[in-house]
Image 1 (cartoon, rainbow, N blue to C red):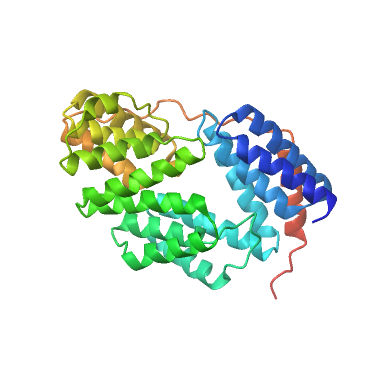
Image 2 (tube, rainbow, N blue to C red):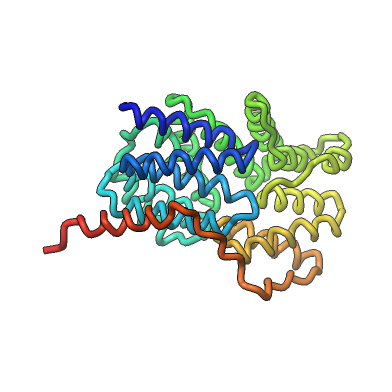
Length: 326
C-alpha cells in the first residue's frame, strides 16, 4: 500500500467508524477520501468511499442523495474493468434485488457471484458476506435451510467477520419466529443484542424482537414497560414494534408504526424490503386501518455535491476506454 492509499484507508475507515455517531463528521471524512481518490485516480478506493457515503446518508433525511450516490458508484464499477469492483457491485445489486423481491434478477446475479469466487481484498470484502446475503434472500422467500445458514456462519466465524456473525443471529431469530420456535428465536436475538452491546451499540430492532419472542414463548415479564422504553430507529424496527404492539393489544400504536413503514416504503422503495412493506400493509388491513395516502409532491431530489461532476466525467472517460465489441 503506497502513501496515498494509506491516507485514503485511514480517512475512509474513520468515516465509516464515526458514521453511526455523527453523520456530519462522517460526510466530511468521506468527502476527503473521495477527493483524494479522484486526485490520485484510485478507482477502487473511489468506489468504496462513494458507496460508504451513500450508506451513511441512508438513515437520515438525505435519502435522495443516498440513492443518487449508489447509482453513481454502480456506474463507476461497471466501467472500471476491475474484477473486485465488479464482484462487489454485483453483490450489492443482488442485495437490492432481494429487498425488492425481484427473484429472477436475484437468481441471475447469484449465479454470476458464485462464478466470481471470494478471493478479494479484506478491506472490501469479508468472508461470509455473500453467503449471509444469500441467507437473507432465502429467508425472505421462505426457503432458508439449516445448511445455508450454517455455511454462512462457518465462513464468517473463520474469517473473523463479527458483523456478519451478528447479522446471522438476527436472521436465525427471524427464521425461528417463522417456524414458530420462539424459544430459539429469543436465544438468537439475545445473542445479537449482546454483540451490539459489546461494541458499545444498541439495537432497538433486536430489543423489540426479543420481547416478542419471549411473549410467544410464554414467559411472564413486564413486556409492556419494556416495549415502552424502545425508541424506533429504523424501518425494520418500526415494523417489529408494529407487530409487538399488535400482540400486546395496543392497536393504535401498532397502526402508527405500520403506517410509518408503509409510507416510507412507498416513497423510498429501494430501502425497504418488499416483504416488510407487505407485512405493514397486512397489519393495517387486519386492524381495519386505512392505508396512508401517498405523498402528493414528488420526493426531494437532493443536492448535487461539488465532486460528483468530476466522478461522472471520469466514468465517461473510463467508458470511452473500454474495448469495443467485435
